[in-house]
Length: 178
Image (cartoon, rainbow, N blue to C red; front, side, top):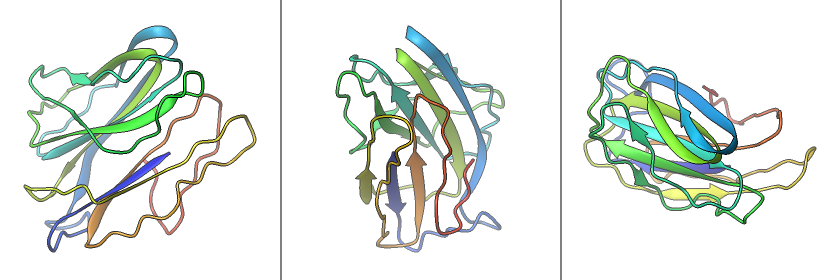
């Protein structure tokens, strides 16, 4: 699990009015050896930032996601859980001011890869990476808790989770899982 916060001066946190709001999101997976996972189509018109969570299993490193526009360059965020060879790994990528379409997809080619992508509107033109927290657990029936994130300003908080078994996912403090 990886949690991050992006504060900006006076950054609104409400999805209503002129605040930050999710535009669309989707996911995809390729659950066997090396392959490409592609999200379902997303209508990201109006979005000014996109985040992609990549979860891999195995010993390969992370490849950078691509999308159907062919022009966006995704940047890897600091942190994330490093790949230990068999436990898998999880990390987040983003692109600020992306080129978007009404039916775009995001893809990644890795070992037993799953990806989740989300596009948002209302994020300030300049974003600053503020904090990260990570956790990992091995084996079924155990809990991974990434720890607290305490933003230094009003923030957009993104949590990226990855697991290879059916699991129950929760987050505290009234956040919404999408």
